[in-house]
Length: 221
Image (cartoon, rainbow, N blue to C red; front, side, top):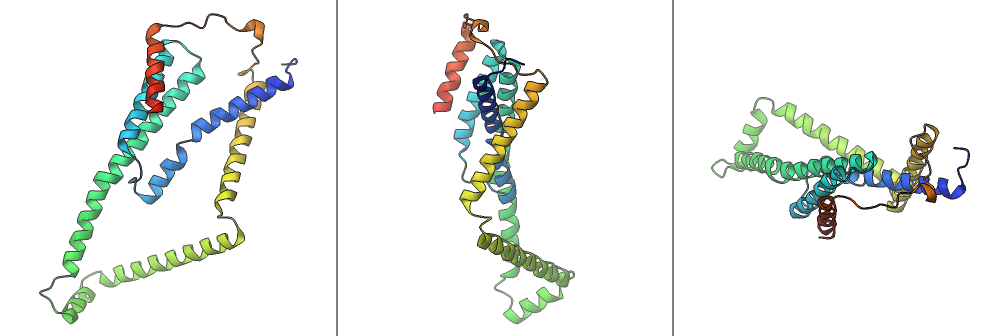
């Protein structure tokens, strides 16, 4: 640890930042899908090809007996891809169908042409729990209005500008990567590999190399 040079430290920090970036790359999309309860803008075909690429990458890494961090990262990518695919299937098909059926049933019950407008309003008001639903809807609209007011104040103060958010996210990723590298170095989990300690034999199983090329093709596709 005492012979750590500036370039060794810089290489370790940049590698750690890269690792953190790859780990967090899908988290914003997963969170956005969960908040919006929708995943219409994501192609399932693209996710399927990406998942095949990550899966072949994982199998090839295990087959070639690569370092544990590479295997763990490949496994994490497969898990994140699976969660993203399940989100798309749920929100685009199952959840969307249930929401469409409930909305259609509600519209049919409220827009019955056989009832006059006055009777329709009276029947709606007179239903059990209608006042409770009305107060709940009013409270919901009040909450939406308060959230819009808070968002407007934040936007005026400059906290919701895209560039400010992106700079803050990049800064946090860099700090997290640097801290992770420092912990790994102090605990002995990371150490610089000098030129005379590098292995010259970079060959591996032919099957693992084929899976690596398949993975690269899937990523390009």
